[in-house]
Amino acid sequence: MKRKDAMESRVVENYLKAVFNAREWSEEPVTVGGLATRLGLSPSSVSELVRKLTERGLLSHARYGAIELTPEGQRIALAMVRKHRLIETFLVDYLGYTWDEVHEEAEILEHAVSDTFIDRLASRLGEPDHDPHGDPIPRSDGTLPDNDQLRLDTVGEGVRARVARVSDSDPEVLRHLDQLGITIGTTLTVNGRHDTAGTIDVDHDGTPVTLGLAVADAIRVVPKER
Image (cartoon, rainbow, N blue to C red; front, side, top):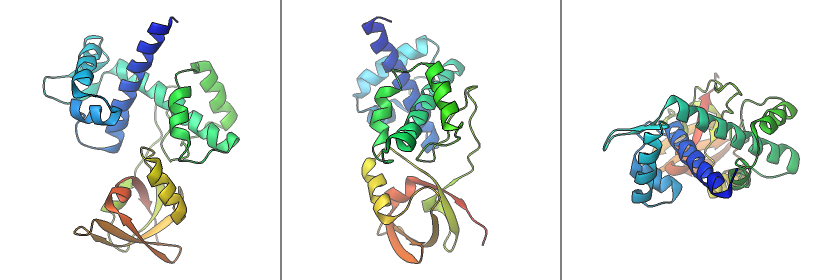
């Protein structure tokens, strides 16, 4: 592939993956402004590429409406998500990276490896369902593992819940949680939410911890039976 074509392919893959990721973490419609913020680009440049990807049949976008992946756009996005999350898993399991270090590395490497390489990597890793952040890893056929989870900030007082997933969009949040001993599999008990202060109180191994609501919003949990 020529250098120019490779760069264009990388840009397209990043846009489609960004649309997919945005839908994973929010029920709000994906807009040009939201996508621009996520990608760190100007709304005008994002609007232009969204138009081109819509013309190519990879996105659907009614004027001033939500941006959606078409079936072909979804296929490409899932393939990139699969590469990204398997690479993150490899970096943690085999190369000693921490969960706050792998995202940027995977962003680079995902464009440099083939589907064959990724399938063999998945086999070597034991066909994992989730990456180090608890994100579901798409299977080679494009299907996703089931994920029935709640945002931590929506869980009722007194509920015990297992941390199942943490957004990797902000490494500082991951490092903060790591310092608190909160990671995938940790059990938390919700003690109370304080909207005025913008905090939520949880109990972790008998230790009270106060989290900002923005941090709690980045955590997905599964309630546990007592």
